[in-house]
Length: 255
Image (cartoon, rainbow, N blue to C red; front, side, top):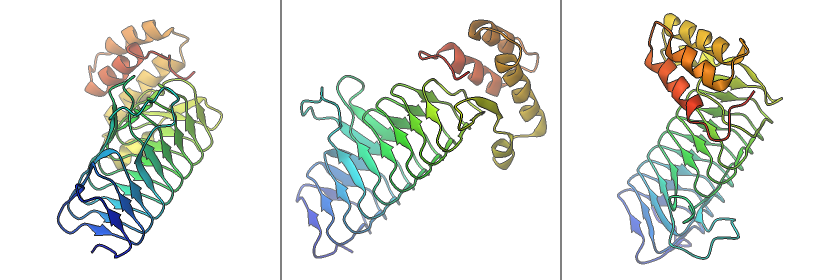
């Protein structure tokens, strides 16, 4: 269904069974996949590609020019996957040529009211950003991440898979996979409950806890902790991923 008050550029591409509500605006270079729903007053602009079965609630602003003074109108883009829920007044901006020229959001994510995703951010799959969460430019978020309400991530920070960010936290460094970050910005153990819900077995969770202790409880420098984690006899892929994240961190990890 296309509401009579919606404005859709003739060159925009809409898939099958797309619903566009009252007073929506869809720009020239927009492509929207099958079964996607736009409630009223949604604006989609720029070179924006949206997958199938997404749901955008009222007053969302999707694919707008970024808030970067270096941006000079270059043809950058936004790519969104499938089955995402984008709630009221969420803002998502396109990328810049200073990075890869693209902002990218995966599939099965929930972005609650007033979330802001700035230019060049990358969000994986199955993550939840609670009300008011704010990502500065170039932030990368992995899979199965939960960010509490009114959290903020500084530019270029990376947040690893399965991490949990407490409400109100200010993220100024990289958050390794599996780590729970308190609202005082300090690591508070691993996200064991989340891992259980996602089917991780008890032995794997135990080994992740042991790796966390190496990283945070034994006084090692990051480089030494990486070496010790890689030397763990179990040789789990999850531990290797954690060690690689720490080794490749450009901002340093939260401490």
